[in-house]
Image 1 (spheres, rainbow, N blue to C red):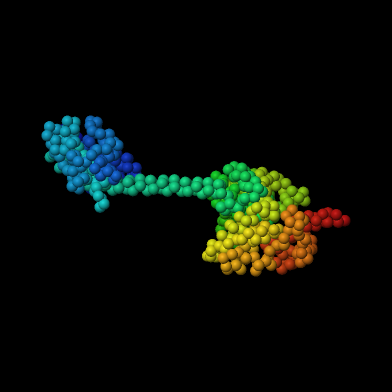
Image 2: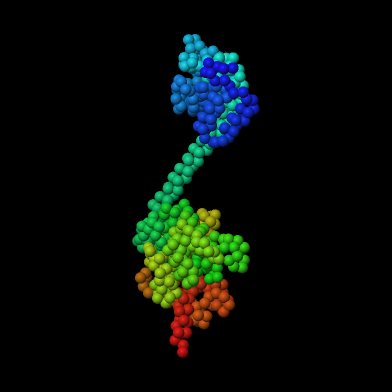
Length: 534
C-alpha cells in the first residue's frame, strides 16, 4: 500500500528485517550510530519518516531526554531537549508499558500534546513503543508515518520487535557509560590518592626516612633537587647508613613513582650470573637457559633501577653498563638485537671509586656516567640528632611486627645510644633495637640484657678519636688480608678466597666490607708484581 508520502514498504519478511536490525545493533557499540542506523532501517523498510528515541531520566522520572530525532520537516525538539512525560503519548506508553497507537492524527482535537504538532507537519500516524527492561522502562521509540491507520498495520508488528532490540542497545549503552564513568572516577581518585601520598611523603620525609639532623636534612634537600629530573644519581656512604632508603626516596619523589623500583645488589651476584641478571638472556644462551628471561633493566621499565654496591661490578659488566647508560638500550646475553629500555639508574657504593679508577678496577668513563649527581649519606656518628627519632621509629615498627605494644624509651636509654659509635650505622642500630625489644617484655625498653651487643662508646666524647680495633677483629682482618693476597683478590670459584676460608662468597664480601678490605686492591697488586717480575 502506498501512503501519502509515496513510499511503499519493501516486500520482505519480518525475519529478514529482524536480522538486519540485529546486524545493525551488533555492528557498533556507539549508541548514536546504532540509533541512526535503526532510523534509516525503519525509513527504508516501512517508510517511517519521523523517528525519535527518548530516555527517561533516572534522576527525574517525570522527564525524558530526546536522544535522537530524525524528521525531514524539522518539527519538534532537538536532541538533548528534556520534555515532561505527563500529557504526552510517549509518557502514556511509558506509564502503561504498552505501545500507544494514534491513527488519523487530528491537530484540531489532540488527544496528547504532540498530536497537534505532528498533525500540522503532515503526519497521520504516531506509534510510541515503550523500551522496557525488568527493572523498569528506559524510554520510548516514537515513529510517525504519513500513511493512515490502515497502512500502519503492515509495519507496527515488526517495528515492535525492532523496539525490543533498541531497548537492549540502550541498556548496553547505559551500562557502558556507567562503567566508563566509574572507571574515570576511580582513576581520578587513584591519582588524587597517589598525589596525596607523594605530598605527604615529601612533606614528612621522616615518615619512612628519618631525617632531623642538619647533615641528613642537607642530604634530603639534594634528593629533592634531583628527584624530578631524569639524571643518574650516585649515592655514597658507609655500609648500613641508609643508601637504599635514599634511593627509594629519589624514586618516590620522581615522575616515575608509579613505576617499579627494582633493586640489584651487584656485590651479591656471582660474576658468572651478573650479566644475565642485569641484561637478561635468550633461550639457549647457556646451559640451563631453557627460555628467554628479562633482566633487571627490562623489569624496571618505566621506573627506577637501583644498582647497589656498584663498585663490585666486574669490568666486563662495567662495559655493558656504560653502553646501557649512554644509549638507553641493552643486549640480552646470547642475543643479537638491541632492546630499548626506559629506566632511570640510581647507583650506590661504600667504596672509593676514585681510587679504583686510578688502579684500573673501575672504568673512568663509567664513573663519570654514574657520578652525574652525587649524594652523600652521612654515617650515624655524624648525625647524633637522628638517634632519638630513629630509635622511636624503629622501636614502633618492630613492636608492631611482634604484635605488642611499643615500650617506652627513656632519656637514659637515648643518652646511652647517642654516646655510641655505631660503625654499622642505622642497620646496626636497628638490629640492636630489635634484640633489645625481644629482651624487654615489660613496658620500658631495657639495654642491660642486650648490652653485650652494644658498640663501645666513642673515646673522649663525640668528635674524639675512634675506639681502637679489638684484638679479635685485628686477627680476623689479618686473616682476610693474607687470604686475599694469596688468591690475588679472587673471591669466587675453586681456590678463591671464599673457598680457602670455607665461607659463602656473599658472607665473605660482607666481612671484607666490614673490615675495609677491597679485593680490587689485591688484584691490582698481583698485576703489579707480575709486571715487575723479570
